[in-house]
Amino acid sequence: MQQHSESDDHSPVHVIQFQDKNTEIESEALWDKEEGQQEYHIQINSDRILDIFQSIESQIDPFSCVFKTNQQMIVMYKQRLPFLKKLGYLICKSETKYCIILIKLENQNSLLIKSLKGDSEINDSTMKKIGNAIYQFSDKNQHLSHIDEIIHEDSRFNPFHLDSLSVAMIYKYLQDKIVIPEQISMKQLSNLIEKEHEKIKEEPLLIKQQQVSQFHIFTIERFVFNKIYDQMMNQYIVKYQERQEQVDLKKIQLKQKYSKEDLINSLEIKNQYLPQSEIPYCEAINELKSICLFKTPTEMLKQFQYVLVLIRGVAFECNQKEEIIAMDDELPILIWVALMSEVPNLYAKIYFVDDYIQEIENEKRILTNLRVSLDYISKEWKL
Image (tube, helix red, strand yellow):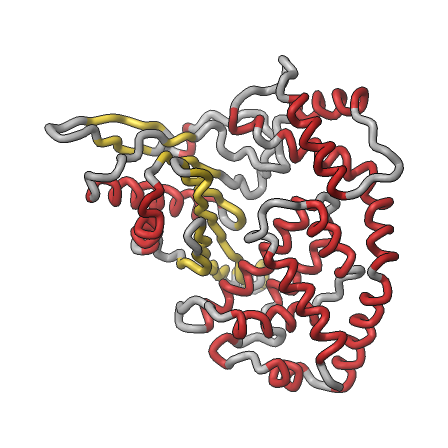
């Protein structure tokens, strides 16, 4: 992205222009080359953030808002891929893919627009629409500060794909410096990682761009948890083994006794939130199963959040593009997803994340709701 300034008799107006994607200079960063997800940072005045969100909603077709608070919104597009045939042979089945974009207030003056999942070209096109919607809102409301900066510094860096040289240097630095005690709590681990992050900021040879530097902490987290994940997770598995065995047994009993239709009716999931599919909310179920692929609490929390985003997105599509608002409507769907997801030691994984991540309570709400879902299955659901 580039920024160009024009001026008139009143105040400067900053016009956002986007480079043609084919002419962008690609760095050697280890971003997700398959999906090429991007992010932008726009400087704004946050006094009317909800009005800005409303302006965004009006200009992002075919995307739709599936979740919104006074701090962030998530927009999603369900992309249907058609059947493809060649010489009479089926070479690609019809399937559905989801494109997901996060718009989040980072601080009083900065708005993050981040592609989370899906087709990178579709997402990038919509992110440009979002940037222009913010500019147009600012232009119409002259008493607000205009957009005065938009940053696109190799924006496809994300928490888990850093410049390869930088990652190697961090690992070498930590190998020589960091000492992990045999007995350590999650809170102590969090403090240890934050302390190492502060030290590593002073290393002169590491990449200094703000876009990259802020993600060094995720590399440190991955380095530490690769070493101690099995040890730490085993402690949680032992601690919550009885509760896990109870819910696993109850799941088996429920599935043996009742059909899928009876289980859904028992949960009282409203008809307007039920998609026409053999297994409703199979996308969210599969995402929850994927939690076993991750070892760091931050990655696991991100995956739990994907589950919630897909639940809300599918419900949004079913309910004539009306958001699912009431927890009484959302929780039965989450219970269904937990019931149908065969995730080993899910209790242990939930508490593993919850004990480590201390500060972002709003984003951790999915953990509380998952615990409630498992407790309902094991203790309250009558056979």
